[in-house]
Image (cartoon, rainbow, N blue to C red; front, side, top):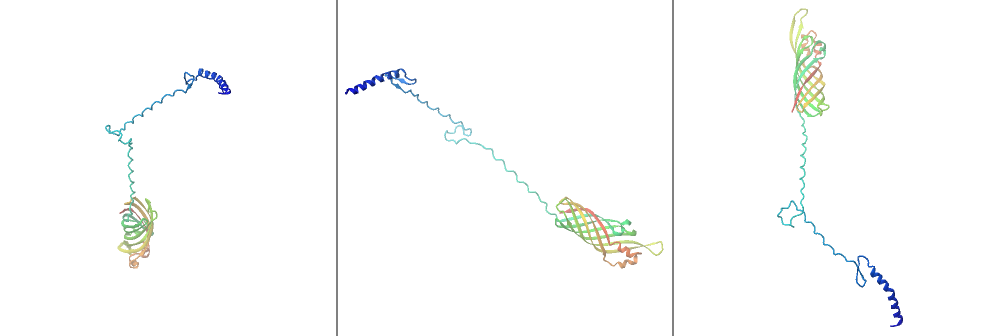
Length: 274
């Protein structure tokens, strides 16, 4: 071996021996140093086995003797849905009542008899047909009697055909207008003076009339089948017979025959519908 190589190895050995000695004396914690002073890495503790998972909780819906591993998962019980609400009852619509029967009381007067206590009274009835809520037709019979002008006793039987127009047919209180034609027959029990004598001669007379009337009325529908009401109408009429045939029986025949051609009549009563 060359002498230069031996010299270099000798010099390196002299330098490394102190370092190895100090490393053996200062062995770090956690290292295993062998007898030759070599240090070893710290020992690693073996990993502990993981704890087994807890057994599944018992399912209350599974029978106790049911074989494990074959039952389904947990069963959830939900409350049944509430029953559907009952269907609303359809509002009962009252069908239109087309027919009616009217009973009423009458109060009548003649135009020239207001200051002579010449009012008359009576009763009547009628049949009503109402094809539309706002329109009705009526046939009415009326019978009135009383003491009229100059103390004459009068009774009249009348038949009238009326048309009624209701302004507010959907309300409980209904206002209507009426108009029509009428036929009547009057019986007059008259008393006349013969000259300047103090006795009276009685005479019975009959008159026939034809005319028309107009008026207003009010009806209150208590129920769909029953109503109360009243109306007032004025009439204008003429003699349908021959007035000159009666002129010989009266002192003032022209005034008497002209005094009963106009007047008014008030009716109040009840109507039954079906």
